[in-house]
Length: 118
Image (tube, one colour):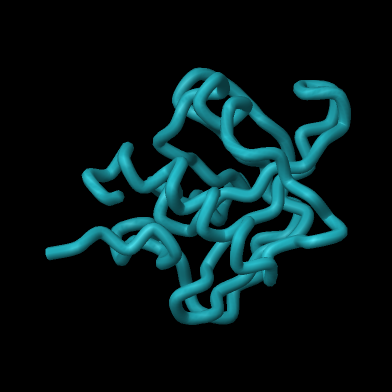
């Protein structure tokens, strides 16, 4: 079975149509920010996270497959990557954004190997 980095995991507790905007995002070693934008599009699920002061007000894009679980009561999303791994990901460019094919390929290429993908 191939791991789909751009899909929410069935075990993540994601409910179709649920708004994740404003949820806090937790890496395995601490908070990284809040969800600014989210997509549930099939084959293109992702979060745009505003990191605030953590990495100087930048935003990061996290594929839906990085989400370990969602706690709707506490409005928190837990991802299975460390802060350093997220910080080292290709920089998010809001001018190109999530629709840019080259950027999505770079993001998928960065996170994919963590899950046994290319």
